Length: 156
Image (tube, rainbow, N blue to C red; front, side, top):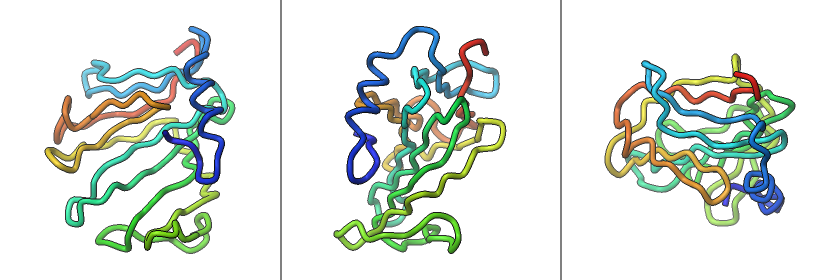
């Protein structure tokens, strides 16, 4: 489940499952606009991009929320200070996960244009898009390709 550390995940899951057809949607597309994933994410819904660190192999999560139609990076989970992973002072607050890693909470950073580009790693890196209990492996369908992840409004 993608719920925020400390709770709230069940509510997010229920919102995703019970979402009306006109709710905002999260889509992952190739450069030719072919959709490779599509999820209903009404206001208040949360989703995560998860992957395995290419050197250490542990799972990393970046989790977002639909806030009034704006894609907002809310929190991250980083099980280690491995290569490429760190907390930037002033960008959220770092707390222990109790297992040697840490959460960065309260990042609350809007994503410009409600879109970002990801190049999913192949094989064991396995970049995934997760909304509630639904998961799409972007690495399985578009390894090393340019994938655009976008929050679209009801009429987009």
